[in-house]
Image (cartoon, rainbow, N blue to C red; front, side):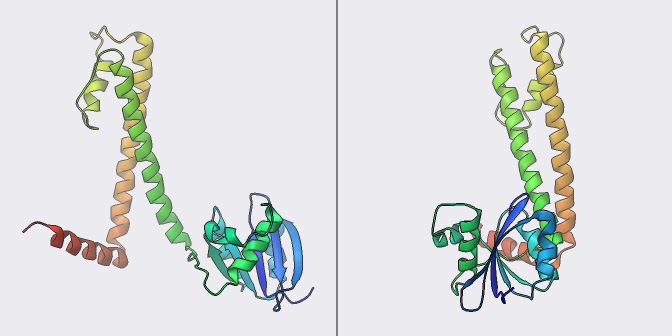
Length: 229
């Protein structure tokens, strides 16, 4: 195999596309690789520059390829798109990635460590649960409003609505509706408990991170100057 200086790697769930060029920009490699064969293939190559679009699993593959001695650059998909010459498919995507990664003015996404990825997942999971909590609250409000039962706006006031559900003396809510609302109430309490657990972990992570403390101090200073005189 001719010397490869740059590779564009289009990653997928099972079959990856590899596009490689030499130092003069001539294409020397076009190949599909199954997921299980990818690392073995790159292990046989001399260290080179590998471009990957920043998407699902890209940080994992970046870490794995860097461990083999390759230089990996992640790029936002929107920055790669202008380099696609033909209709979109895996082969043209890999070629576009290969062309984009060698551009001197390209902007790259730093590869996240396993710790950074875990911290990001903590925040994203919390955000997802908060959205689910809001959806459940809105559903409870909408369903009970159909029976003429309402409460003031606010997450805490939804507890008033759930008290109505368990009140056997309340004859405006029929048995089937009561069962559905009770299930929503259980889900809401479970979501609240999980969000509180995420909050505790985030606070603990903040307290153990010097960088996070410095950032918080800067933000606190900004909040101080924004206060009215």
